[in-house]
Length: 173
Image (cartoon, rainbow, N blue to C red; front, side):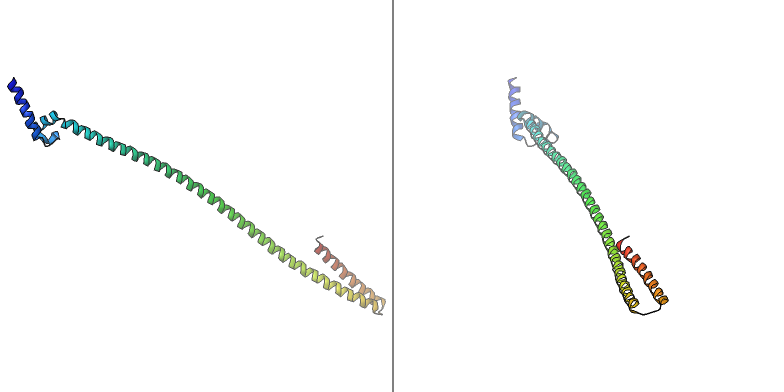
């Protein structure tokens, strides 16, 4: 029995000295026994678990970053949509202002045309009044027969009626 224990210790020492690979798929029987005896497999498992934990930690961090970026993207899209809606309102307001200004311009143009027509009527009324005054002065100075004077007076009355109508039109009544 001592001999077996000595042989096992010798073989273990020999295997430990020959250990080169800690991968059980590559080492063979003696390598496997050596790795079991020296804890090579446990070290390999621990190293792999540490690497896995590091990768999982990195993956979790990257997933968190992805979620944060997606949320930021959604928020930016919402802000862009809100900005677009605001721009739409401003453009609508601009168009309404342009339409209002165009209506005012047309009204002012119509007012100017109306004022020009009214000014022409006023000048016509002044000219008619001057003509009638001249006729009145002549009628009062002329020694004409009564029939001619009556005819002249009727003509003056007709012109005065026409002038009266023109003045009423200018006054808005």
